[in-house]
Amino acid sequence: MTDRAQLADFLRTRREALQPEDVGLQRGPRRRTGGLRREEVAALCGMSADYYARIEQQRGPLPSEDMLAAISRGMRLSLDERDHLFRLAGHATPRRTVHSDHVAPGLMRIVDRLADTPAIVLNELGETLLQTRPAIALLGDDSRWTGRARVTVYRWFTDPEYRRVYPVEDHPLHGRVFAAQLRHAYVRDGRSSRAAEIVDELLAVSDEFRDIWAAHDVTATHLNAKRIVHPELGVIEVHCQTLVDPGQSQTLLVFTAVPGSASHEKLELLSVIGDQRF
Image (cartoon, rainbow, N blue to C red):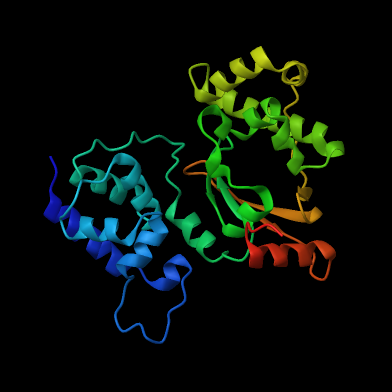
């Protein structure tokens, strides 16, 4: 049952509790009150300021489950707070699993402080949950993928265009690593898992995947040093640092380059221009 008044009050109190620094925003000299403005929260949630304002004002249509999920991410809600939000809006709470796609608040706070750095958050299947603007400029916008194509290993073995992000000579290693990561998820989660569905699909459509899978290699791992091919800036050599949240099986990847190098200059340029094209 929906409780509009409690929903509005909950969102207001969470908004007022958030500080600009919590979400990577600067505290301007004209800010007289604590908390975030409605338009700032709306931007974080990827919706219009008017739409968000109507929810707090108990007006307009009730938010859908997709909108509630966006609000949960944008307002950095914990899993308990997310579930409470869904109940207030009259929706069933999302099924809780060990491997949640709700980005851990701790990882969100770290990403908020990496606004000028390529960084992405992945779940255990390699689906992108969050990207910084420089990460989108470097690797492309992963929000465009739907269905099984959201899974990195599935894209790798079914979409030749996706492979352009890495030099051709690096493709064999990446293929082995992606397959090894999928095998780890497959063994951990069992035959009834999404990982098993991806395995079955790839075995049916990709000769390359079948050959790699048959080798049963579980030792292949990505190197910290990577080469990424940008469509306009060319090859960029980066170091990939990894932070794992074992509680939710989520991984934060941060890409940096050696200061003073040509690749460092390219990353700095990407942090300025974003996904604009020359």
